[in-house]
Length: 162
Image (tube, rainbow, N blue to C red):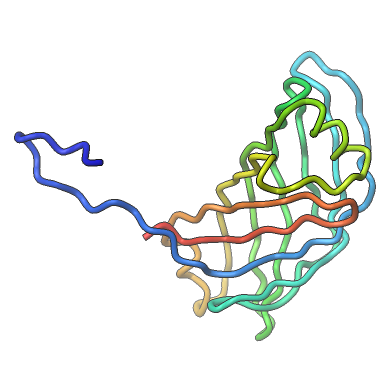
């Protein structure tokens, strides 16, 4: 499908290039409760592993996934954490997006059940910040992420939008 009209030149469709994956260990949620903007939850990030064709290392402990549950099937996600690469560089990550699905499946997910990832829409847009010259490329592109939640961890696949 093209959005081009006869009055403008065609533009290339974006592609997705695999960059790395994260397996982040998480603690049980800290429930804040119902606020005027929704139910607020914080998920402590305990650490994790980063593997992939363009980046490898670990997720440092101390990050948090801040969630606001808008309704029974939809959550706004805003995670903040630090990756330490295999060569010792540190990369600050802000990963914002949404997770949605049928309310009964989301309820089961929150109770710790493993739910088929194809049944839950979990997409985010990570942004990176680093002082490492070798990793500045992370600050010069747009990335998207597909995720899934397991009882004790979150799995993320990060792609560069080409």
